[in-house]
Length: 296
Image 1 (cartoon, helix red, strand yellow):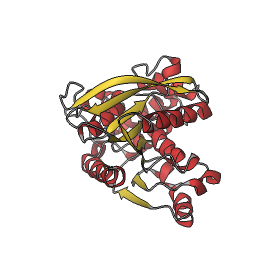
Image 2: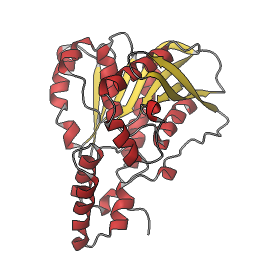
Image 3: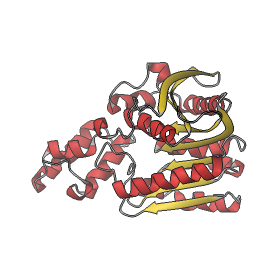
């Protein structure tokens, strides 16, 4: 059988997964709710294979691609976890200084999908850096369940400070043209909003995918242009948008918002059936064009 698509799965299953993935439902309850769909003819194997990630599907750019070079770099983070580490990818076919883009993972550490996003950016001519918030605990453990539990156990303020330190490290890199972009997904989308709000001079452009906004008290600091990417079916994050939009407008922040019809939270992640190929490709084309316009 082909891998299930969103059309095969009831909407409530995606809603339950979102609650589970964001700590609002434990695994036992999540699996029990999925089991309740058996009466409708859905097997557990079909449901779990659709909702849980298969990272073999997410590689669009190989780490062996001759146009890029991928390495790991550490950086100082005295207000965070002292030392951070991330996946650094640079184009090999373009010399000299380049625009730099911070890539921020979801709430589970630096998984293969996020690494591939960094490689996609490097393939497009940007220098990309994807930090792993779990570095102080040994790094992404190889599965999302454990990664989520690890990240949940950590001090959130220190994690935020780690990403500020990573952004400063990347912006000051010898190959940087001193124009920093940031793109993030879910928790990473929140971090992009936070980076724009915590230091008005840090970002030159930000693209948060389905991320919640920074604290209201910080939003007056935002100066960087933002491209907000949202999925129509993502009720939890979308509920935060009207208030955020009002603040962006009142503070004269240049922004654009794209709402992708019938797209779920996580629609850009091509490792699960939440992936919407048409919306993801359009969102990525817009992201790449936005960074080209603002950073080069």
